[in-house]
Length: 142
Image: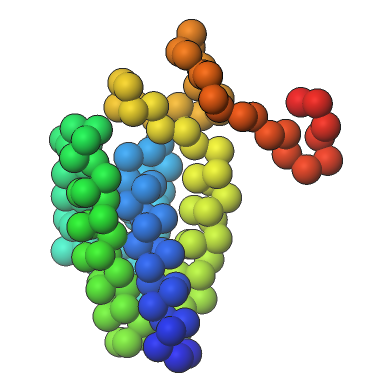
């Protein structure tokens, strides 16, 4: 795999991981990533780093969260690049993780007012002036 492809994959994986850290799917992701790094069993050091990532994001205010996400994503990008350098066969696992997280995260909306994560549309009486809702392809008028 060339350097540009590794950078693209690790950047996408790290962003997806950090985004997942504050969702209901994180426990499964956490186990999967720790297993990926441990190769035969979950790596306890990586598991601790995953928990620290989740805790750091959970403790961040909405204003701080974006900066924290960028810092943590950069750290995970380096970890994923090191993983691929040590174990090139992990590429398929990392690609599968990215694919699975991408499909999961498309259905998650973060409610920055309460700091929580909601699944599906979040309106709850908020002023939605200027927001355009676009129906998915093949579902006109919904």
